Length: 171
Image (cartoon, rainbow, N blue to C red; front, top):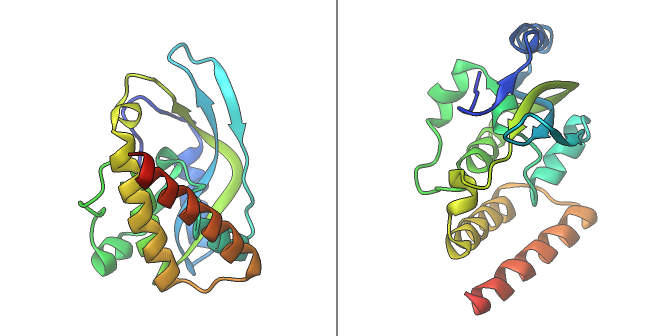
C-alpha cells in the first residue's frame, strides 16, 4: 500500500483493498475514489472516477485517474516490472501504473478510502512546466506504442499530444 506524507488514509482502507485483491485474484493493482483536501483538511473536491476495468484502461491511455495514496499492489508487480520509473520527477506514479497495465489488470474500488492533500508548496507544484510537458510527452508515446485504442481514446490522445506539442513551442 502507498501513502504520501501529507495524505490521509481511512481506517478501513487497507482491509477494503486487501479483501478486494483476495476476492479478485486477477487484479494486481487497485486504487480508490478519494477526496482532495487543503492544508486545513477542508474538502476541495470528491474524486469519483469510473470503475469499469475496460474503461479505466482506455482513459489511462491519455489521463491518470489514480491518486497515488489510494494505490495498493501485489508484490508480484515489483518482481515483474520493477520499481517506479526513475526518469520521471512529476509523473512517476502514472508511469508506474502504465507499466503495470502492460502485464496486469488494474481496478478502482468505488469507495472513498483516502484524502489527498493539495498544498501549493509541495513538490508537485514546484516542478517546471517544461519538465512536466517533457514527461507528458514520454507518457503519451509510451501509451501510443503499448496500448490498443478505440476511436474515443485516439481522439483524446491526439488532443493531449497537440497540447504537449503547443507547450513545447511556448517553453
